Amino acid sequence: MSDPFRAVLSPCIGICNLDDRGLCEGCHRTGQEIAAWSVLDDATRLYLMDVVLPARAPGGAGRCPGDRAWLCDPAAR
Image (cartoon, rainbow, N blue to C red):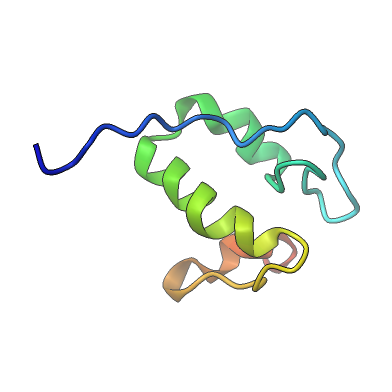
């Protein structure tokens, strides 16, 4: 098996307040992302956790690569 199973858990850390940008202060997801989490596919969850959420975090790059750059800055939508 070349692709080991990787359970995609929620990035929630229990600090659940939306800031002025509409991002959770704990996990940096939008309200829409939080609401949809249970129905997102694993690839989308992994992309959010590995690329988008770190970019949104304080000290993060603030940008996502390629055609999904808008995901890292919800205000740009």
